[in-house]
Length: 305
Image (cartoon, rainbow, N blue to C red; front, side, top):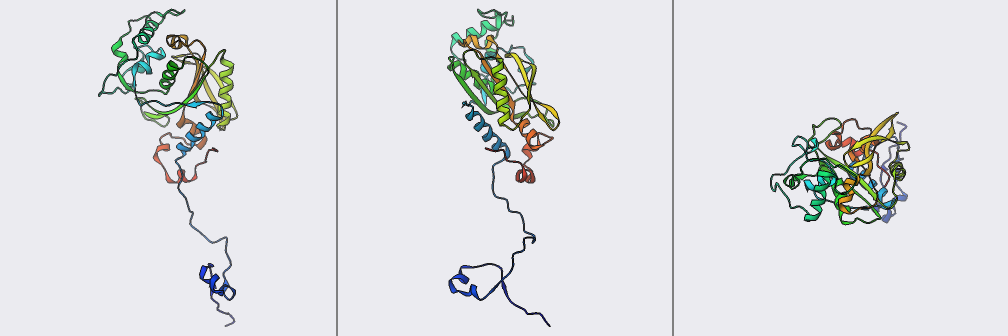
């Protein structure tokens, strides 16, 4: 009693419009407070979106992308980068060696000879080398690449004259114990610049600009050690009230560049992509990136591309 029952229409249909009945019916008011299930469209994995972001940043800075193979020659992965054959990183406990094929063909004999002389006695530059007998069979071994620097040195061997500005993004493999911050298979990002009079100040400027474009305002470098660069630096960014190390950098040693006829400085730096994602996404365990938790995939911040 006292209530007038009246049918209401919740949705305007083509039939109501074509027949003109929309003028006669009552429409239910839209309640913005009514519960509605969330709708999630398809999207790329956050790791893939970060790769696209990095590609865009490098392109804006005038770099060209290069690629390489997962299976590499130990010569290119280690020897060409002046890493001694008795270095711990070359042990089976640290590097994945391929069984079939277990060896790959070396490049031209003259180049191999120059690298051998550099290892044994420092070639014809002011260097003592490593002072051991270099084993050609060790250099022939097939491995899963341990860093993307192998792409850089291959490219430089084919392009020894400046200017060179290239980058690479690729999966690498190291026989490491899987922990909250380490994986045995992960993505590495690397860039190199080779030009006349390139120097450390230029490298620091490039690093700060790259990381600024990636969203980090505070960037600093501190002395470090890497087998194929001198001087070497570690790059740190300020994140959540503390400094976090994201990668290494430096200038290729003459022992690396001289056998390939490179006469100008080569600036190089690299970072682990997963650690960059951890920093931006607030992830505390690197393994969570590959677990593909549905809530994280839906709610992760999108890097501006």
